[in-house]
Length: 338
Image 1 (cartoon, helix red, strand yellow):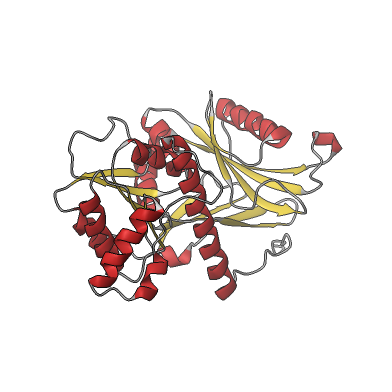
Image 2: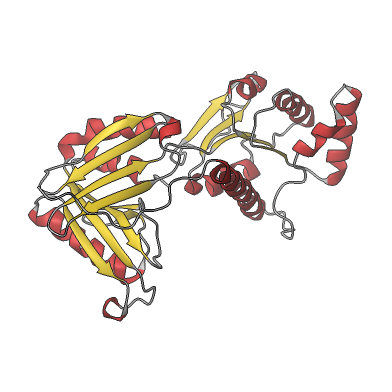
């Protein structure tokens, strides 16, 4: 999750300094993985590095760094009785103060990650600030960090993954709005499409782009490969046309249509009459939502749909990692002696 990125750009633009708290390395059982990042300002925080005493102590240290300034620092915390946590592992954290004069750079980085690019961060002992560079999406498929240290000196490499969860949602009614608000915190990059120009709420969650168009099928054709399509408009004929346009593609991650089993049967019969290969009908999820949740309230439907998409997303990630496993997390490495 990269919710800290746009939040950081917004706070810096307001003239507020912030601190990035990043999990640089872990050993044993820990609540978050290397690469997890939390943003801390004087009043609040965005994101999480694991909660509990670990997060309370790191937040306190971050606010002290905000107040007095100074170089980035490395903290080592054992998650045992002395910290009031029983995980048993060890966490190394890097804390870095970010000044408001870098607001423009951070807005550009947030925009790049939202568009699917990744970031590489490099930082070492006694350096005043991290060095950041843009990466192509294939170079940063997941957030991670690697720490080198010899006890006195240290060096961090941190990869921030670009957005990999493009959702194209058709329909801005009550259920559509509930689904958007359920998916946004999961890191979805949502294109929200409707033919009615007065239907969208005045305030949209981050990474949600509203599109009012008389040709919603064009948004199907323009969507990136690996998109998650969700059709829930106010019109059954429009739903059918959108489904046909989606079936014309073979590169989507998931395709769902709101409706009953009867609606699915009616639609699939027409698809086959129009020449669709019956084997493709398995690509359509309808009714939508994980099994076992029967409620019809928009928030309940949204909960079931968000859980279903997250299941699909994690299954795809597991397959990708099995096919192209990342390097095993190395033991804490040492810097060469000068």
